[in-house]
Length: 303
Image (cartoon, rainbow, N blue to C red; front, side):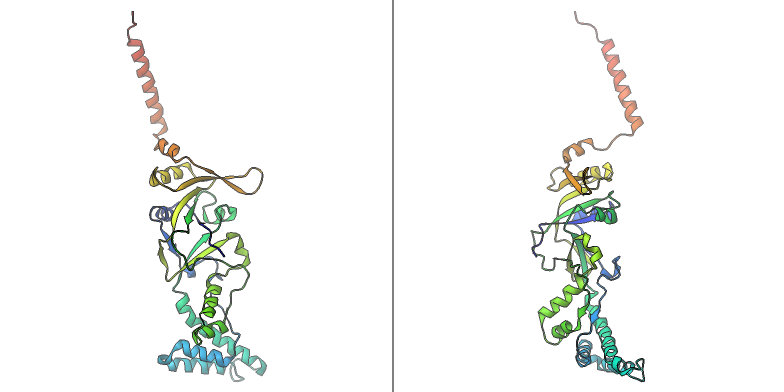
């Protein structure tokens, strides 16, 4: 799928948002802190034989941990026997495969859990995302350009309900050197979410570890329809009038449930600047009025 030229990040207006604007400060987040407990929660589907699963586990643990893998495999076989947890011979094989798959998952997590994820959206007009991630429409949405640098790991999230990584893919990847199988395992784990999340139209970039990501340039700022005018003033002042960042007011469409946008004149907002306190401003205007009146009364008439 072709990468969109623009992707979006919804934020409440806070220090993190200011850092995003000032330093193009996007971050690869730790997936273990995501609000969806099923997101990037590794699940291994044991679709190969116990023998292959045993060989895979031995390979992942390595020869230096021979005592460990011998113990793991012996324990799995014991609990899948009549002397262990399983009393029905027909269920022992499936139980053994599940135990081995879980142990393999523990090893694969050591690599996968080190990664970081940058989450963006393909749209700025999601009513739900404005509500959930942008302080109930009081925040902002940042527009980022994707065309300046290559983004090899930037891809859309799938919402097809498949989240289990096939043990056969991990076996082919780790023991057979099949990079395509490794890519399938990687993509299933990092780019799959439940169908309930499809409204997000999410795209993800995967980093080697959580932390800063400076590969995207901000090209637009969208202000929610409940966003305070002071937020607009602060961002315009921070960007300056020479900025190439486009600014938009987001408002409700009067005839549908969709959102619309209107471009903002940054110069007009910048000209307003900081306002005087209301009473002081009123007193100043009154003072200027009386000064003008006094000058006009004292001016002699011309002959």
